[in-house]
View (tube, rainbow, N blue to C red):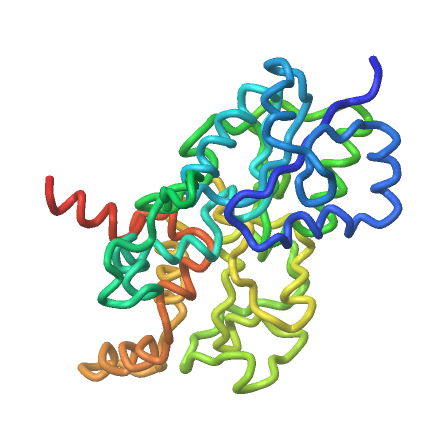
Length: 323
């Protein structure tokens, strides 16, 4: 069958996903032996003209990391889609919008005003001419979206960045030439709590804690201790690496298939655990006081998935209001 032809592309992201490809250690040598890399701007000197020259469907698989934030991101995503047989949303930003999706809490104009100031006088410009030369820059889109909202995605590898265990699964399938059916998410269908070794007693929460305020008991469920751990609303598959390091899960793998909105599901779980052990008229006030200890609710419960949540962001909110 010959070597597989693969590509890796970096859109709106921090670059951590590219680094995660090397965390499989010597397994990367198996990939290098089994595949030719046709596209990887981070590691090879490949131009867009080279990508355009490939035949449609010539590349076997492309790992696309990063969200769609600029017109360039969108254009290249569409071009890659035509050149590859299989497209992978690799990492949280491509999958659910990622941390940078929190920018959707502001409109594009608000972001520009923050960066350039109130008197920005038309900045930034997408084109300019000087000394006979024309310069064209990618347009900053109104809103950030995950890859699947621009083109069809065949596989998803979640995580920020994707953990070594999941990347290894993908590479093993690629080297063996046995990729799973289209639509597969390389992660567990169960939530993170199912693979977390900590003992959960479903205890009532009487206060909200952050790891810097108190060192968690390494054996006890973090939620039972009052730490906001996104495990109940997050896909497993990473081996619960954050709880194993005595840190709460932040939800980077996204929700399980049974959950429509990750943040809402987690808020519902937390609300069911809040309690004072009291009864009577003051109970609701006391529970509200506990929940009031939460800082940055959207940043906590929608840290990686605001762009795909029911909230979406300011641009969508304004459009709904206008309609």
